[in-house]
Length: 82
View 1 (cartoon, rainbow, N blue to C red):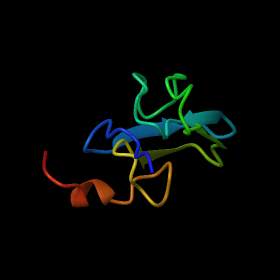
View 2: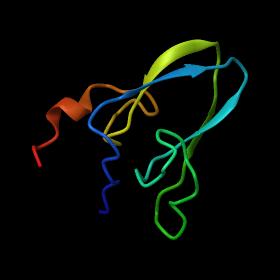
View 3: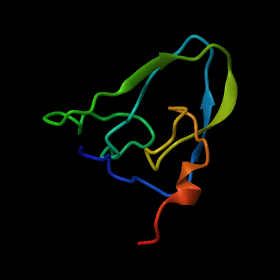
């Protein structure tokens, strides 16, 4: 199975706005990490679209291995060294 590209080995602190819709990149190819810019087209990946329930700062995954997308769960700490 095709794995997403590791965009970064650290999460991104993002200030979400209550009621705003976001599209989280799941392929890892977006130049607008951690958000989708459409580079997934032609792959099996689709963005994870969500609406923020409240205004808050969250740590969003950029390694694309989290089990709690779009939020970081620390999976980047278990990635093999390059």
